[in-house]
Amino acid sequence: MESVLSPNAEELEIFSNLYKKFKGLDGNHKNVPSLYAKLPSEDEPLLLKLREESRALFLQRRSRELLDNDELQKLWFLLDKHHTHPLYGDEQMINYEDFLKVQGEAGRKCKPFFQASVFCKLLQRDPFGRISIMQFFNYVMRKVWLHQTRIGLSLYDVAGQGYLKESDLENYILELIPTLPQLNGLERSFYSFYVCTAVRKFFFFLDPLRSGKIRIQDILACSFLDDLLELRDEELSKEMQESNWFSAPSALRVYGQYLNLDKDRNGMLSKEELASDRYEGCPKRNRKRGITQRVLIR
Image 1 (cartoon, rainbow, N blue to C red):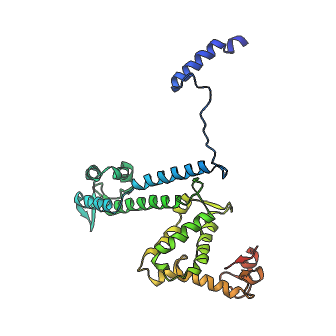
Image 2: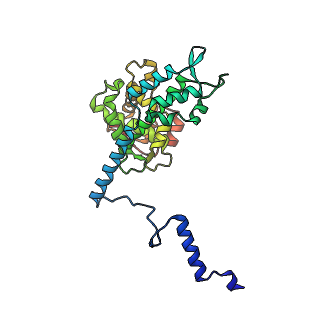
Image 3: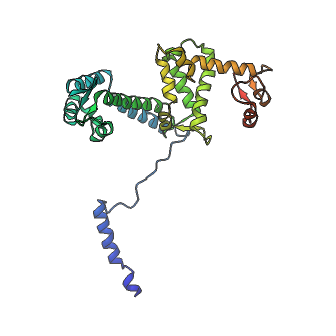
């Protein structure tokens, strides 16, 4: 009975040959290809440089695949040209047939946005089965922005693993400050405190396990980056600035509170100072329960 159930050498060879033929494997392969490439260490500068350059080229290639302003304007022109009558209130609509016409004229870069699944996602209760061209265009712009921002954040991902350490995010925000008109009034001596304040908000909410790193995907998914980049608006109202954690008035207000708590003026906040009646941020009973260390404020 045992000899009937146990395959002999000939059966194993036949099975092995059939398996290799089915998988398209060369019979000379003796080793399984490597499925994991270990990150180069600091003792391997050549490999580190090679990895860095290859990532930079990859990100540049991905950046070139994104729509630029001229291509976005062309897309809007085509949507306006091929919109489907009648109007839905004051809104221009487009059906699937005209949607495909725009795809044919828009070019290769636009093709990923002209999928049937995208059309169905934006489909609402229009009796003619159409979608709003404004909603579709906003969808395209949002996707382009997300890809641009992901590429920008990935440039600071030293390890290339999809995470940003605290120092990586600090460098990103520090280099972002000059591009935000609403922060033009900040003195350079205040940059370090501002960067620390901004980074700690990201890590407090996005790194609950205190691993010291946060996923780029999580940064893009939360609203913090939107709030930070909102400071590019030169006409941002005073009310919007007051409600934005990353605005200059908000950062200066927090800094003023910390300075007011620092009774001995040593640049540090002890548990006793944070628990004092000078702090207006939260009830005193919560402050005493949550404080475990001294806080550096300069």
